[in-house]
Length: 250
Ligand code: BJW
Ligand code: ZN
Figure (tube, rainbow, N blue to C red):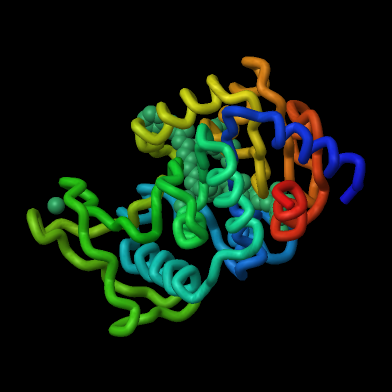
């Protein structure tokens, strides 16, 4: 991480009035939650996205899909927010007009103190009916905890008896309209967007930093690797979020 770049980014933040923090799996990596596309540890390197993260996968093998998400949920339950999540909450506290937009399905922003982050890809903690969308309680971890890849039958809807599904957004599904609209509106009106720990490959979420840049906001990127979002970033801080973000709010 280059010191002049950190100073430039800290100055951009100090002068910003309306801030959007846009996060992806990388911000939770240092909490032990695996990302999707990292070379060695990414979930999509070990698991087949088509067989786990599509509506067709759930239709064809609901127990495989439910068991995999229960395994992911149990891992997140054991994880704790890191210094990156805490720094995001500190930015929110410092800049009254700020919005956290996350692609993550974990709850680490909330547990770090962020108020109502917008979850573009849903949540591991909000299962719902696959037919009538009635919300279902997240199962009690103490009762059943699946291992890596263990199949598990999903519960049934209390209202219509159809299968309950994970409350996440799978490939080919629409994003929650309210969250997406609020995110686009925040990105359109901000003067600074900080993108953290995302590969910027998944659409329409990856539009959010692009919308901000197009409408004149400055963009800071925090990521150890280059991404397609380098093209819209004014400053790219190439380091892990839990080291870089605290340096911006010191
Ligand atoms: C660190 C770090 C550290 C590491 N500190 N950084 C072309 C072809 C085929 C399909 C499409 C296409 N164009 C568009 C599509 C559609 C598709 C899509 O975008 N596909 C692309 C992959 C090509 N999009 C969709 O299907 C979306 N829906 C849609 O388009 O609907 C249309 C529609 C409209 C109306 C009606 C109906 C339909 C939905 C996308 C849903 C994405 N879902 C997932 C899974 C969620 C559930 C689950 O968790 O299982 O969301 S996929 C996965 O990717 C997850 C993430 O939120 C998302 C983004 O990943 P993210 O967060 O960027 O993670 P990584 O792993 O990619 O990157 C991590 C980064 O962190 C890396 O850069 C590291 O370097 C960095 N890092 N350590 C900081 N310590
Ligand atoms: Zn139902």
